[in-house]
Image (cartoon, rainbow, N blue to C red; front, side):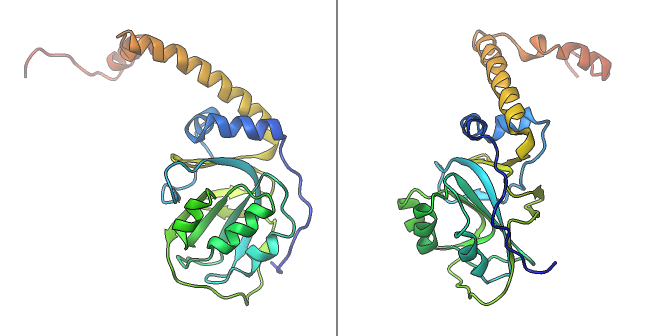
Length: 227
């Protein structure tokens, strides 16, 4: 497609975004039927990194971060940059200077299917980043790309304004229109798991209260004292 910058996008309900972030990746992934999880090579640059926000999507040429700079003109408080490249790249396309610019503009995190650099500085700044690679390889600013178009990042389709939830467990995407419902389902799941946790803590077997003995029988698994 022709290089394009979409200046205005719809965003999810702010309360739903906040709740989804508090629930975390594992709960959100389960609550929405085990979909939306990026491939596990997308890792946080420091273990306490955690964030949630609306996706500002960026498509760049490999080794060229021009469009990341362009995207920052149109971000709002609470947005997350989601950056992909038009072919595979591990170049360090984002560093501490862009991190400073992001924080000044209200961006609360970066998901990039490429490389980042200046990790120590970004960590000190407490700017959360999930990336495919860490590399000091520099980049240029020469090639056109797009901002706020549909993209695929680490195996997941993302539209501008979708909700990103990211923590040490990875990165999960929630469709913008579904955010409020998934937040509700996530809260229900947390309440249910709290009850299960108490039963497990008391020594009860999940084999029993999950009804798994019947499943074992159905699958033809046999019990023997010795073989």
